[in-house]
Structures are given as C-alpha cells and as structure tokens.
Image (cartoon, rainbow, N blue to C red; front, side):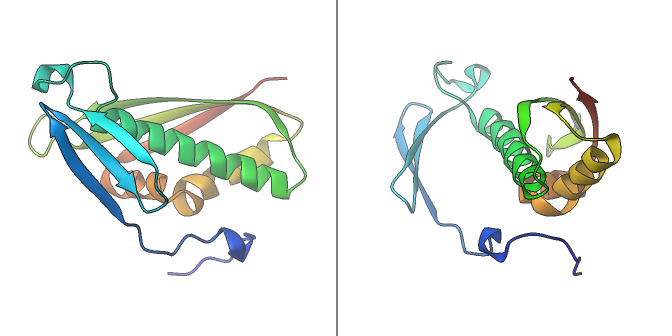
Length: 152
C-alpha cells in the first residue's frame, strides 16, 4: 500500500534496527543501541523490579508519545507552522487475558499554534496512521483514538 504524502525522503526510516539487551542482575537489563547509547531497563515492581528505572511498558509508551510529538512538529514545521507548546496525554486499557496487550489507546494532544482545525486534524490523522511507525503498530493491534485541543 502506498500513500502520496508530502514528506522529505531524508526523513524516511527504512533502515534495519539493531539492539543488544544484556542482563545486569536481579531484574535489571541494559539495552545497547547501534549508535552506542545505553538504555537502562528494570522490571515493574510487582515483577521484582526496584522501582527506580523505567520498565518496558514505560519505554513503550514514552516511545509512542515521543514519536507522535516528533512527527507532529516536523509535519507542522513543513507547513511553516511552529508549535509553542505540545503535550500528549495517553491513556490505555489492557486486555484482561494473555497476551495482555492493549485493548484501547487514547491520546489527547494539546497544541499551542497559529493554525486552523482542519490542518491539525489532517496532521494528526497522517501522524497516527502513516508517519509515526509506533502509532501505526498500536493502530493495528488496538483500538487507537485521539483528540486535540488547541490552546491559544
């Protein structure tokens, strides 16, 4: 499936991803990216983690919100629109069976920018379904919805 979208080919992210995850002791791990970054990971407290490091679900939703935010800012910037403030609040419910994936994921996006509703609605639709691969995955595996509030 191909979509005609205005997006700089330099931004296309089709390269493979390589990551090494190593056990550090207890329920702690470290993820090592191909660029040399290290990401600390711990289990949730109820699974034996210490509660001082993010757990995998924390990182999953941080990645989702970060990806959405980055793609929104890039898309608006391409139209000459600068957002003074951007906040993404996400609430998700889990399936009550295994695998305990997410049944619903809802985002409320708060934006402060000088633009009209149709531009924001179109930007968010493209972000959630095409531009942010993490949001696209959630859209395929859960009921993902979003709304926005313009702050002026």
